[in-house]
Length: 114
Length: 113
Image 1: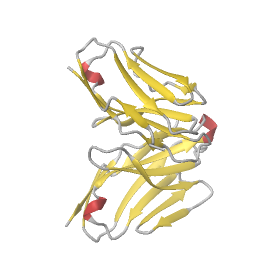
Image 2: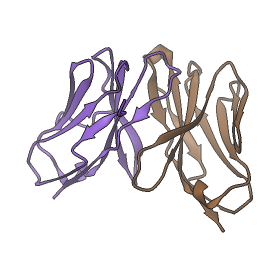
Image 3: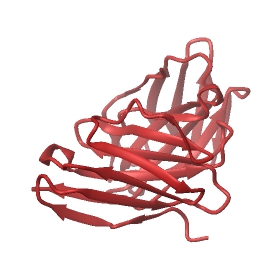
Image 4: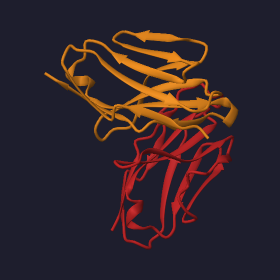
């Protein structure tokens, strides 16, 4: 297995544009986490899913952020419209649901909004 | 919800010395405590984890201890080497919340040679 795969690796966009980040889970995993990493705020949990169902989205900063799991192996995080303060590295991670199993991270997407 | 606090935020040690990073958590239902290492520009990767039915776990130069009563856990690295320099994150998870995984703020460890 290639592990958790994120795309794109880097994204530079202008303020106001829509941004879509993508994540492919490890085969057989059924929990999916989206994190945002910045120097100031560390690794913030934005939202997580179990079996394609969003469990807790309390970390999503604003209505401009939305996340979906259209199927068991794929997720998207959308920002519309994007703002400069959204610039960060966004990670997704997947695991096997159970509360005590390793979460594997993707390589991350470095987003820059200018 | 769960809150994880981590100290110190930066730690500088001489090569060969030990390093200790401490974390506290708020939710007594948390039952899984992983530690991740993140090198510059890379993804976080698991280095060791401990479950709530165990008080201590060791893997070569790395050990983790858990005190459920006090709700704190610690990472111990012995005989530090320059390649141990990285950012270390503790985390806590509970199956009660469908395994919500919450991270501490991270510790920048520098090992001086």
